[in-house]
Amino acid sequence: MKPVKYLISLLLVSVSFGVQAQEHVFSGSLESNSLLEEGAFYSNNYLKLDYSFGRFSAGLQAEYYPTPMPGYDARLKGIGLPGKYIAWTDRSWSLTAGDFYDQFGTGVIFRSWEDRNLGWNNSLGGGRVTFRSSEDVFSLKALGGWSREFLGYSSHALAGAEAGLHLGGFSLEGSVVSRMGEGSPAVWWSALTSYAAGGFSARGEWVGKPGGNAQTLELGYGAGKFSSTLTLRRLCNMLDPMGLNYLPSLCMEQSYSLAALNPYTTFASGELGGSADLYYSYKTWKFHVNGAYIFALPQALPAQETLRMAYRDINIQVEKRWNRRLKTVAFVSIQENSPSHGNRKATNAQNVFVLDVLYRFPGKLSLRSQAQYMYSEELTKDWMAGSLELSSVDGWSIHVQDLFNHGSSREHYYEAGVSFTHRGLKADLAYGHQRSGMVCSGGVCRWQPEYKGGLLRLAYHF
Image (cartoon, rainbow, N blue to C red):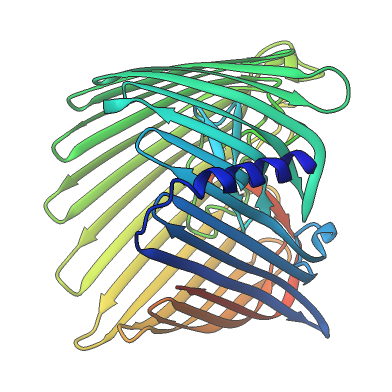
């Protein structure tokens, strides 16, 4: 990684002449997640430190995995410093050397980001320079580096640039990225345009790569207490072996456990679909209707020549605040998922019903309760779930929950715990039985194996 070291040295020399006497700002966070399961101990630990002084900033992230938590790649085991950077920023220019996160367009062509819940971190180690003209009319960005691999770097490199023109509510952006690994470099490109006026907004993107392409159209409208969005997208052979692009699922990201039991994951080989959201509020009522319909492209299916449904759903949520103490949420999700991504006609259907009640007692306490039911004739058939959480404004909370598969396995998946929050500190201690399945965040998922044990989560921000 000599090029990175040379770039960091050059940037340190340059910023030493530009830093003026200003306030020193130091911040950071410490996070630890540990599991004790039948004598086995697993733990993921993160330390992040950031420092700024005038136009200069620097930071690092250290990570320690004595044994990675279940569901995380075992090759993370060990201790390392996978995140470190220095940067200099003025009114128009910025320079960064080290490890950083960034995105071109909507992320289909390139995105690097971190999500610790998924065990995902695809930061780029190298350098970046940005320019933005006065009044933000013109912007330019160029970057390059090596993608992260576990606690170090991979042998694959990426270089790219993005330029943008912004005039009032109209903008036009273009970007190009070269992925360099084994064989010839693979060039990806993107053209994006957007427009916003009054309550209306529109954004469209076209992406191309060797042997693949993608198109995205997003429309939005809002007026008063009503708002709506519509997203249409087509993907064809957009899987990135380097893992440096972002293909979130079009369907709604579910927050209730049974609605998220069998999530749909993006079919990067080829899908065509759309999703829509409608929001409306009336006095103490709030309404949200969401739906998605996704087809698998024929060229991505070995045994089909026509469009086949891969996923569809409709979600309806009604929230009512009855008074200053009581609030209820009623939620229904009707889902149908093709386990073969449309290659066969067989699908799995499930209907989920949820009642979520929050009551604030006089004084410091509040109680939140949930009752969920899922009806299905496929997979593990019917489920029911319930939870209670007693919270105090002093920062304490106690919770119990249970998911019961009464349609097939007759298995209980339970958890009981206590948590405490004070200023920058949050601590959670729980014991439970976790089911195996997909864990998703932002439409990206990982497999979580089944386990039973005690969990300790600590997070401190300063």
